[in-house]
Image 1 (cartoon, helix red, strand yellow):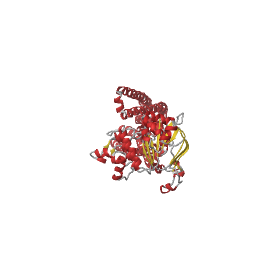
Image 2: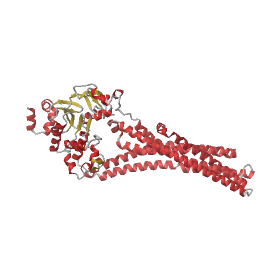
Image 3: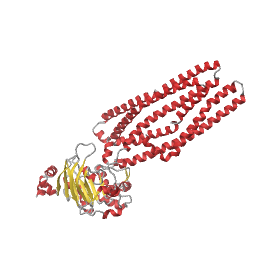
Image 4: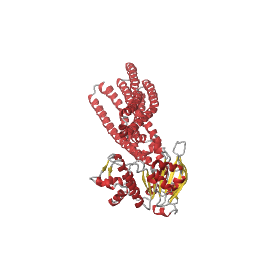
Length: 586
């Protein structure tokens, strides 16, 4: 939790005022038993009604001042707590956006959602309570103890026995609870993961009639979460009754021993009542402290999980060399090749084997490069390295003769138009989704991109055209429509490099052919990387890269690879007719 205190730096004033006013409230509260003792010993004993009313007015005044101090403390503590949560949440969101695909895949989406919502809320509640109660409760305990000694030293010894016993019990329960709260949050992660998977994959689940299996799995996860919460709740619930038992036992001892002292004339009746009030104040302070400890224990567990994410170092870092001006970028390191990969290796975190091994090739501006290979051969990994979604483990990638690591990420990714394997659209209109590619794109530019992507026809068929609403994830569109819109989104920015990661898999052969023809005609100056499982989609590319288990099995034209690359020849024979293969081999 200490590491997260830096997010309170803009709320130093609030962080000081809140506990200060709580201590002022506690100070006035400590005078109340003395005034009560005075009323009993002087006013009631002597039947002095004016004195009783005068002291009663002082009690009322102390109550009003205490209320004002309490409200002030509550306001500033809440302000600091909410500000802390906002700063932390914003910083964590920025940090998550800096992480590469490798780190995001390693951490997991569901646990990131839990940590940026539930865990930060727990930490925020902990800060709020600490500012209000962390100093007040110990101050009340210490103050009441000192005041008790000013009344009667021997009876005050009862306080000295009760308070350490309470402290040991509170510490023991806290020591047991912290790891249990961490387990609760982990089980919450699992429940959230299952919820997300079930909602996202609802169509697949229904298609395979797996609702009952998923419900059983979800019930098991929620039951585990409930059982863990019940266990930690039972342990935490021991705090209040145990505290009450010890404090009430101490009160009984005070009344019993105080009664003996009253009979001997050592202390007055009012002083006994004052001692009982001080013990009651200690009880209430410790109850508040116990609630604080429960909340703080949760906050500590959540803070640990938050720090795990914040401690994840982004593997994609902009170096000093990358701080070049945009106007200078086209004049830096001129090269005959647009893209070059030299001895590139890549290994995923905790993976035993490399996903890409010793990959080298060169691409001229305006060329179309097809990438083909079996499942898991490293096709998507290869094209994700170019815009630095992930960094190479060894070797280098050059863009216009300059290492991609030397480009600012913003400039590098502005050069690239990426169409991911999974077509992702956002809730909003078609126009808003296309403008993700270029914020200031005109309708003319949008329609041009739609025409190339073969999406103009179905957009025009919609009653509202570009203003047609797209549901979250594009659920109201077909797979092919989603893919064509994501292609248009990449094309509208007129990128220097266009990366199509198996982005036509949902298109029929006729539409796919029209798309390839339009791309060849309208993106002549654009370097295109076309990943596909279909030999027909990449056969007309200028060069084709054939991957097998992360290694380059072949590199050349369609005809060259048919003759000299066994892997490519097998792929073509499995997809093309014998006549087509024989014709191409000639």
